[in-house]
Length: 436
Ligand code: ATP
Ligand code: MG
Image 1 (cartoon, helix red, strand yellow):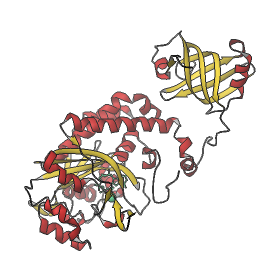
Image 2 (cartoon, helix red, strand yellow; image 1 turned 90 degrees about the horizontal axis):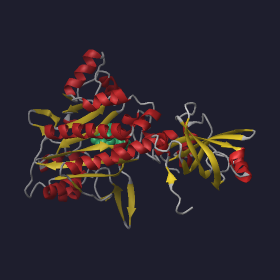
Image 3 (cartoon, rainbow, N blue to C red; image 1 turned 90 degrees about the vertical axis):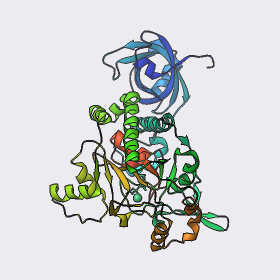
Image 4 (cartoon, rainbow, N blue to C red; image 1 turned 120 degrees about the vertical axis):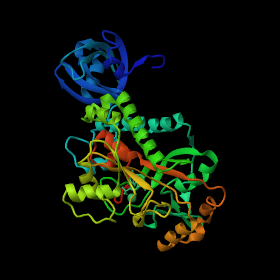
């Protein structure tokens, strides 16, 4: 139907088409018929709308088609928009024309199916209201990240995905056969960012990141998207404040553009609004251990990394995200420098989200001490020869620099209030799943 003006459902729900004759295209979300009347819910990318099809209002064959059509059939319909308080969204379409584009076969997804079944059917489940709402919010978040950095004078800088070195520890590397060699999928953009920061000074990127996570958790994917930044002439304090600003910026964008989706997900909008206006505290790792041991009666030894249990208990004491700095140097990656004021610890931070969502951002100052980095890599069994190019960055006009990575799916999961990170990405890859 070239030349047809197609109306989108959101325009109807916004009250812009009341009492008007319109054309609509989309999919049958639900349908039931009784005698000479069919009630269907039509969806398009922007919402759902009740459509009432009465036998006398349209050609006989079209009415018969509307009766036969199963859910997920694609349709082009015409009709008049009426306000109707009994309809789920307050509007109804009184149908005068109903054309089937494709009669759907019986849809395999029905109510109350197991999460694993839904993951097997992900290519179809992606049409569900819940996943569509998450994907729309994800799109806002990704757009907000670009906007935040571009507004603040950062250049977008791309690093290779195929990399010869590890960055975050050998145990989570994915090996790739590279002609006659063996290389790895990117665990981080960082090492290359550190090369570029001496040219561009303020850079960011968002890209696919790969980590072979050997344990099943609700926070780890094998393929995820990380939004990273690196900045020259800055220190740990500067960058924790940038991370806080970025998170508030993202939240404000979602609150502005996605109220409908947050409602579909039953998310507490007031709570998010409050967080978006709050200052986020910064505490040290040592202080965090203190809270756990004194207020939670736990027995966490200084030196141990904070796992899910500890992070969740800690966050029972906060309503907003919290920045935790100065983790023990022993458990930190080779490029995180010692804090001269507290040499048992590194100049690093994690930002932990409230409500059991764990670490959403991790970052640090970058070591400028080649000998110390070599030593630490050796202790991990690494060949330091492979890192000579990286050490060169310290040999030619090195300056203090610092950066962090934000886990896009962690932030999506937290803002959407979903229980498992798998629903924060369209086609999740985990230890046990790489299909469809
Ligand atoms: P964790 O301790 O949760 O494994 P990490 O310390 O390994 O995280 P970083 O190396 O600091 O994480 O990575 C930066 C950010 O990327 C993290 O704060 C997190 O938001 C995200 N992230 C890290 N690993 C994963 C993963 N496997 N799946 C999804 N997001 C991840
Ligand atoms: Mg990890």
